[in-house]
Image (cartoon, rainbow, N blue to C red; front, side):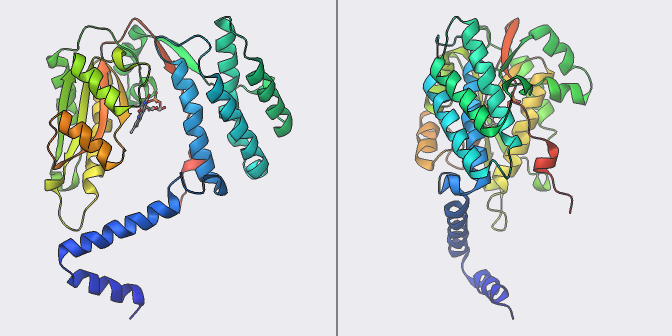
Length: 331
Ligand SMILES: Cc1cc2nc3c(=O)[nH]c(=O)nc-3n(C[C@H](O)[C@H](O)[C@H](O)COP(=O)(O)O)c2cc1C
């Protein structure tokens, strides 16, 4: 008998609580090996993912209702430095990766110029990186930065076919002060309840907060610095751990995630804007949020969805997607 088979048999004889401990140890081992904060630049994928994140911080900055004049210069300079390092380490392996962040930086420079701000340090670092990577700045044509949209256009597209629903959904970072009606929210929640779930257990829950409560929740969430006060309704999507058995310890995150995405699309369909906001935090931070907002201990937080009535005109981050060839593998 193979060692792995023997281990599995022995494990199955342990009490469930001990099996859970082994499960946690296995997750710990994966975290230590694959978490992007550990030995980041020694792994091309960890480096790419973290660069995409830093790139997004720049486009997200441009998509807020009110941006501070000249915002983000240090962050952009730091991004350029890391991109230079990427080019040195991995430029020969995957140079195309540079196009999207470089396009974002180019559009950041143009954004600042439109605002009457010149960022010479960023500009010269950008041109130097282009020279080092042998990329001609005028040929950086990938869509990047932000785009101005109208609520009318988004309403219309959301009611089109499935593809126009998906292509017209964007994360919006500011909404009208007026709150969305419970009728509209209930319509979206009802649509989202069509989400498939493991053995149809539907172990998802939602907790909806408005006004000051929503703002406080967003301040605690921490990922919307600069626009917490521009989102006046938050839906916390949770999944109930009580719905799952010993052989499926992580299923609550999967079912909850599927539900959350359907809810986001449903909100768009009923004419509301939305933004998913992360709950992927360390447990002590989540515990603080759960205690303050009376979310039961047995529910795991999946995501907070900021939602609301769209303003007539909206700036959205373009958030270019990677090509399907980079994320798919036919086996
Ligand atoms: C799980 C999750 C967590 C997110 N957390 C944040 C966040 O904390 N702050 C933020 O501004 N955007 C957040 N976003 C929005 C993403 O930045 C956005 O979905 C991504 O850039 C793609 O853009 P799009 O939604 O406009 O297509 C989050 C999205 C997801 C799916």
